[in-house]
Length: 470
Ligand code: NAD
Image 1 (cartoon, rainbow, N blue to C red):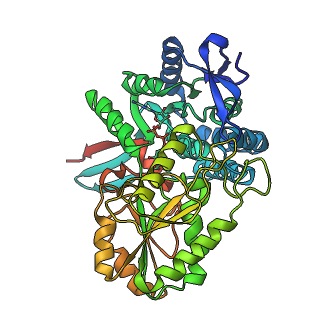
Image 2 (image 1 turned 30 degrees about the horizontal axis):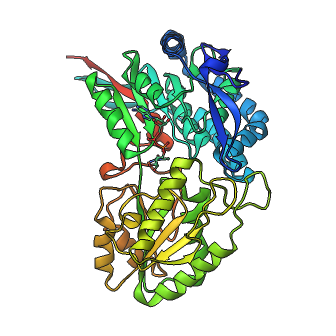
Image 3 (image 1 turned 180 degrees about the vertical axis):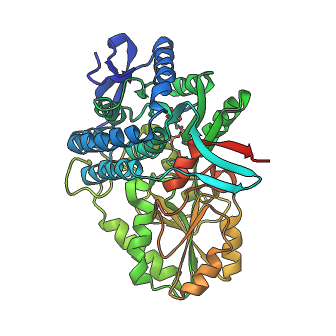
């Protein structure tokens, strides 16, 4: 019997042993809990509850703001308990799991106060044109395993403020903190407004293809994102897709290696490199190649890798065996082709999906470790002679999520930033998300926009009233 419950129509729904699946702690490789495996009937019940709840939830914007604020307070109280569950199922250090919960609380609170868009584009003797914005209806929200709570909240908060109801499905690798989140929020939200269901990838496919869903907000890999888009196209459901990245960082000849090395390093290795927006390849000016590699190597060698529940741990394990095997095989392939390993380079010889921070040089752009998204703690460093060449190599990919340029001359760095084909380009930083800017992937890294008011708008459709006064 699972002690974790799905939330369907405001009620906790637990599973018996036959309808549950195991969740593994990646630091120990042991099953530490069971999650309910949602049945087709339960999924339909969740969607019907959402459809029913939508009718009244959409009516009163002020009431929604009050409820979301109250929900943020309730979540703040329960945050320490959920953070611990998050560390156990995801692997990240407890302090970072706590930070993730705190960010989710802050996001819910800030969203509760966010103004609604509203425009009057004509108001004269001929007539009045007023554009208001309304919710879609039932939203399917699907999340990956790297930031289960933060990514769930980046969908829930704006979707609910907009007046939609939601059925949320977390990754089967990390369902538990999200189930706990659903139970906490359901102590405040009206029944059916937020439903949380857990299960495998097939549950995601059932959810996205269900006719009651009007909008899909998906975060995950490009391969799955394409499947979601295909299914959505069948009945023209609206979609927001936040997909994978292979972010380049370009280090210009005037960069101060000593001052940027740690920032650059943690932009690649935070959360064990499992961030869509992590630095995944570095192009560095030839003159700085050796000092930068040495600085990154030193940082990698001194990073404490371990169980996230140990307060000394800076980097936890990879989340799951499949990802560990992928990262190991990318690194091994690079080594076979002549890459030089400066730190790490082998799975740690102990229980747990541990792979240490690894810095690779003598790699080429066509090696999969550079060309593909590694989504793990292995960072290739490549020298360049002309910055135009670095820009071309950085852009030569179907990914377009983020990128960064590092240098002392901010004007020059900004000029280079303008030439990079990604949704966001940072200068002297990376992975710096803010509600003051839209977050969107260029090329195959995504469809639609998230973050701040852009996230709210993504859960609203225009409604135009055009009055003739003639
Ligand atoms: P994934 O695509 O394997 O799974 C993501 C979610 O989709 C899971 O909940 C999964 O169960 C579900 N799913 C699987 N098949 C489905 C289907 N056919 N229909 C509907 N849902 C389905 O991704 P992952 O391995 O969990 O996450 C890692 C990937 O996510 C990386 O590529 C990473 O870059 C990306 N990511 C992107 C962002 C972003 O904001 N751009 C943020 C985090 C992660």
